[in-house]
Image (cartoon, rainbow, N blue to C red):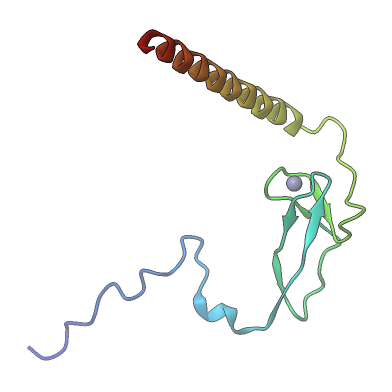
Length: 113
Ligand SMILES: [Zn+2]
């Protein structure tokens, strides 16, 4: 009866990428990178690791650099322009819906008045 009833589920917190909490004991530094779109990403590196001069922006995929005022130029033919255009389209759609909703509200107010 004794033993054999080890507590289960205490290691649920282990990440899906297989990272282990114990691996975080080394001191780390956070480094800010800036992309041409003004996004800041702050990956962390081991203190004794050499930090790369550029980092891919996790938000838009453009190369990001260490200098906020002079981020690396966006490469030509980057596929994210289509995505940006898509986002802009969506935004104007939302504006259109808002205008429509406002017009409907006015219409209803008129009817009731
Ligand atoms: Zn970005």
